[in-house]
Length: 380
Image 1 (cartoon, rainbow, N blue to C red):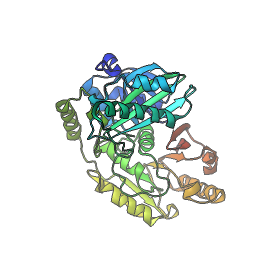
Image 2 (image 1 turned 120 degrees about the vertical axis):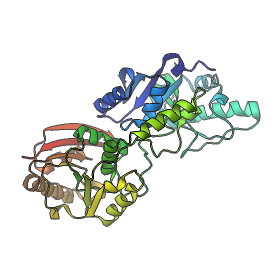
Image 3 (image 1 turned 90 degrees about the horizontal axis):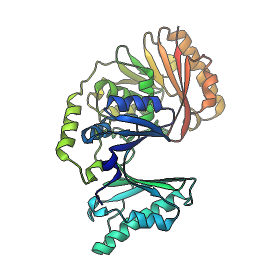
Image 4 (image 1 turned 60 degrees about the vertical axis):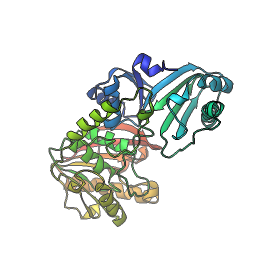
């Protein structure tokens, strides 16, 4: 089967976090996508080969970019199995390569996502067994081919995950702390802050440094997938290594290390050590300056963009401790940060009122199991 859906239509699908839609749509346009149409937690869009390679390599906001192989009505597990075997899987996979499947099912006769994924896996394995007597291995961590199965209201779509897995895994997080922020969420927050490198940026609760690293990657124009080791697009039957190498070479040539305007602090020595380890993974990572300091002891910030995710819940302890910390942080912003702008992400929406400041705007943002809220505060 060579008439794969993405080749017939030039259409792809990008998944992203709830609340990041405006960021995602704007990014797609910047990267050359056309005919962008919003779907459930993502966008359909059209792109030629060079453009889709560029999107996969550079996107900061999208967690998955999918190339649909086949779309069909799917009312039973037997029909899913039968239809999946219409694909010649040897065009995408060999016995020496590994594969994995992510599946999502909603409002359909097949009710269990894991079961649906198992049916697709069996169809692939059985086809190989029938032809060769062997089957390729499954590797859920770093597969060569990551497939995506989506069934909604008995309509199924089988796609290749062009990033080879979630694109939030940038590759710089060598060390982490409890409840780290997802990289795509951090990238959306940096974009929404409209920080452009013209004034300092500081995170007073920097944790393992995700916001700081994403700020550096944006300002230095480091492609989001710069450190990524595997890409699912390499398994496409029409993959063009020459075009792929040209895209990456052109993107990497744009990297330009900025001035040392990015800094962070945290009361945790473990967190600061994590940032120092993680920043080494990135080109120019040394421009990120961090120190172990309680925010109470900071002198304050003028004409600075403050971007942060204060600790809460499992990272802090009980609700009373969280409320007190946020009130004191609100006082710090009012008293010591005049002329600055703060963007505070709350992992729990109920915490917004605890800061004691009125936000300019609020935006629900969800990722990695968090249903949070980003608030902007102008500090006069």
